[in-house]
Amino acid sequence: MAENGARPLEGVRVVEMGSLLAGPFCGQLLADFGAEVIKVEPPGKGDPMRVWGRHRKDGRTLWWPIIARNKKSVTLNLREEEGQELARRLVAEADVLVENFRPGTLERWGLGYEDLSGINPGLVMVRVSGFGQTGPYRSQAGFGAIGEAMGGIRHVTGFPDRPPPRAGISLGDSLAATFGALGALTALYHREAHGGRGQVVDVGIYEAVLALMESTIPEYVLTGHVRGRTGSVLPFIAPSNIYPTRDEDYVLIAGNADTVFGRLAKAVGHPEWAEDERFATHHARGENMEELDEMISAWTRERSVEEVIEVLAEAGVPTGKVFTAVDMVEDPHYAARENVVTVEDPEIGAFPMQNVVPRLSETPGKVRWTGPALGQHNDEVYGGLLKLGEEERAGLRERGIV
Image (cartoon, rainbow, N blue to C red; front, side, top):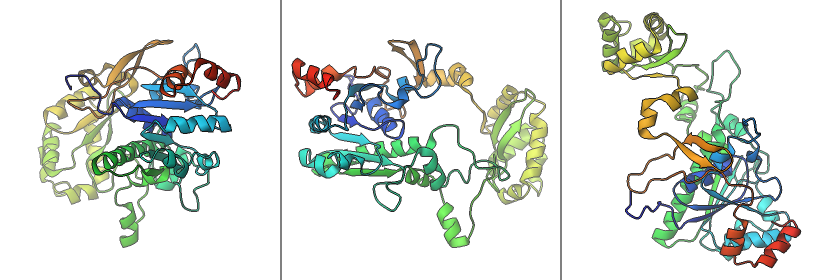
């Protein structure tokens, strides 16, 4: 770590507008590495994420402390002209603005890029939306689930005889936010290193999903093949599947490379498999995938997950358990890597959550505090940064602007 303990994005000020996931997760990523992220929320209720997700018995959500970690919260009514003017003053002091409103919303409020770049030419504006800022679908509502469908990942997820499921997490939103953070850092580097102006980072959720879709486009255009759902396997890649165990659990085994398969065959007591013409080559194993998977399953069914992992890890065969949260908080590798950290929350107390990724050797990110109370930093930001007097701030509160 740097001797002075500095975080890599210290000195970068981010104003985060918008709500739920696609914009706020982008803000979280930047805040994790030391950017000052000022989250703008509507007075009264704030971001809906404050009440989303599973709650404790006392009604406190367990999602908000993570998605809003390391951020400052101010309240501001962006629908009122006085609030819009205050937003302009705030953005004038910022390096980055993150927003995920429907395209055209900020323009109607006089807060579009053309308006704000006139005030702050160096501003980097990250705009995350369902379908992007241009094109015939730009004005349509587009949550993450719709982006996952349009981007193609829903069609290739699950089993061929069942409807396409979701991944169990907000994958489309998180991908768009991650690309938004990448775009922000790229634009900031260009501004600083090449003397450029600020610019717009335009991310459509469906585009972020599409970016992960490997060779699905040329597969169709050049060969006519449309990749579909294949369950827990990749076609013609074997063995690489989940296998049942004695304790009614599953273990993943990836032994599809020739040398790895040889080690796998020996470890399970059947070295002859590596010489069998049905399994001796990558192509042959792919052609006989179902038969090979059943043979491996016969071996794993007689053993516990731990036994399978121990034997195959010793043989150098990639093997792993399907982890739940229980496994994550108890696993020694998670502990050694500090993948789960505990942060003190003012209301909940000790609060465990996932740590910052990626890890930097000299200037690592850090979870410094959990999601703030609504408007917790109003006086600090409006009084300190914007230098509004106490009487002026009181008037803004009375008029419902903050």
